[in-house]
Length: 416
Image (tube, rainbow, N blue to C red; front, top):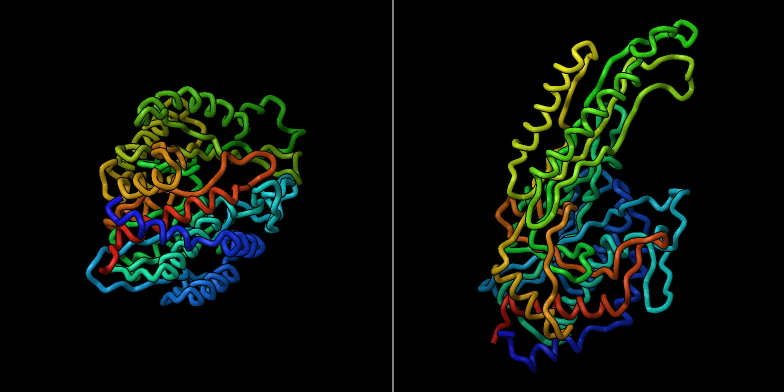
């Protein structure tokens, strides 16, 4: 590494496993589903203040705030941000998710930490905080600033219509959007998404679209001979045509060895409390994953063309169409200094270079890169989620904290 080997060893020796594990348990034990991040924000404000950072409390809306900690350097180096969301993928109240890792209660077992958010992505916030503390304990003075951003509302969800509204639906980058719109602009950023310590050079974006059909609203007793006019029966026809269209779009959306994907995420039609009526409308909702080299307008145009073709094929079905999410993909050059720095630090700690990948999931890199902030996803996880839910090995946390600390020294610069 460009920084002195003895200095690197001095920094990494200051990572304390006991503090790291204790903080991981603290953050998991704070319930923070989307829209309910306040207590988690208050905890992070205290932790970052205790670590000696200057803390900014950004109220995104009542009861929700980003927490930005900054360790100022001399002002002569580059400013590096570590960013992670405080909201969890699930609420912890889902009766169908019974594993330890789906609950906001930390459990230590067989060298692993289980609990909701430990994987996505409260554990990363702990690693960032402990990395900065290691820099300070080593007596390092930086040329540039290092920032830790704990943000609200990243999870992939959104408001729709007048039915699904409120804080719990305002995700998909809401907190990071607010942050960069209000003056927090580092030179580059590391997102500790659960990548299994792989460097993610690119990820897909997403467009969500809705197709709706109309039909007769009539009592079952008077539906004889009119069943094909039901919106559900009509949607059956429309869905067949959609499924015929999907493989063509998926091929068009291929990128870096990945095949694109379209998910039929929701179908809504009828009234469970009144099954004696044929429903007047039925809707289907699609998630189109869009590669970073495809403009979102191109993807929307493809979906709109599908709609126009469906109208021609089913002119009496009362079809309508809307786009209600549009999030671009993101990518970073493989030769960017941030990627090279992580490569070198990972190799020093792990003894081999990290794998690289392109993924279909989305992150706040989508927001950051639109503001000219080069961003890479590289974070702690220990294999995919399974029936046990979220879990990460303590060893993984310790290793990546050391790597983050070395990245701080290299990117921000060490004052001589």
